[in-house]
Length: 129
Image 1: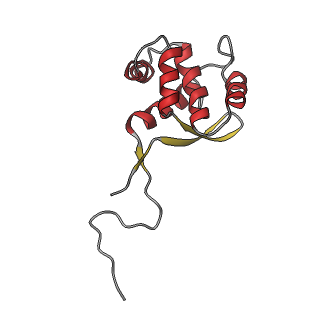
Image 2: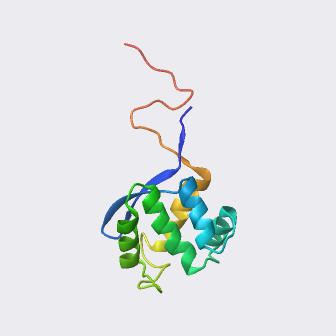
Image 3: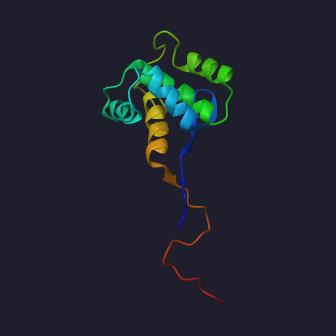
């Protein structure tokens, strides 16, 4: 049985980044998004009824959970999303901030299965020569 990962590598901004929301990041996300539960933030983003801070903070904290330092994560998020208000459309184009936030929240909530190449699927038998 393969294990589920709660992190995801995505192309965003100027490169490829590892995003993850771990316990500390989830607690901070709940706090900075209005002291509501993680499930409510997840639901708002997935349904498209999000607030700007839901997107901004999910991406920023996802970068931190993925291993980027807090200062660099804030710099990147400010550059590619905007600090006080969006500097780019949040729901337009590939790898837009809304899509990134959905992927980060989805990985934290549900995880995903990483199937290494060359491994057999469950139930397949190996042919011997």
